[in-house]
Image (cartoon, rainbow, N blue to C red; front, side):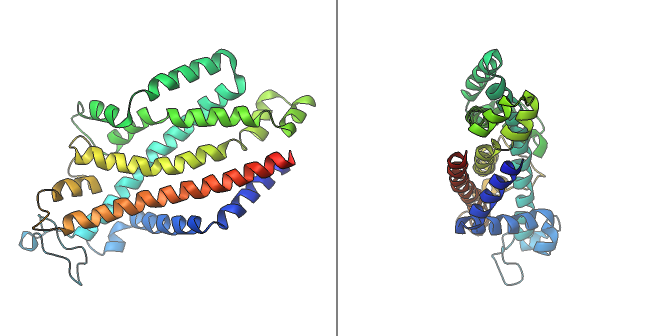
Length: 289
């Protein structure tokens, strides 16, 4: 147990020494604040609209301007942050939970369990995430946050399962794990106390980058007309509305696009920081094994 704690402590130290990790953390903290209290941050109600202000450009009082309905565009964009992060949280947490269960079983038990999990993952991963989303969501009459997140989670778990399986198989061959097995530690206790805590880092790295991909895919599906529907507020819906008004009101495109790019970039930076920290921690762990 002390080895696990020491490994995690070393991993956290290496993470905090990485400048990109601080940038990612700062960006995500700001985005999380916007998602938690969008109306407080924007200072306006996105449903308090006045047609007389339709498509007004940005100003000092309203820095993002107004949309075609005369609604404050900053408030809509803030609520879009909540929508995007909510979908990413649901999809990634679902895929992570599935990966921990199935990947651990496949990597630790092996045999026919490994064969079944691996083959199902291979077959399921053959369905492109966007294609699967288009097919299922196009047949759904109501497409809210839960429906879109459920479809993306349904098709998004195989990559994490494969990473978790490989990590468990690698960890269980380390010397300290073999030593614990030699002294008679029960298999499931060994998995819970030694193997599982040291196998999660690669999956967490993949999950971080995957969150950004989920947000981009949701926006793509919504922009294509098969994702979220009104009255939901999302960056994809904002981009869909903006496509026919680029010359008349370019701010309708600029602000949600900036938020989308920055959010995806933040998750990519977080994933890269975790990957570097995980790689260094893995080298140290194997060197001290």
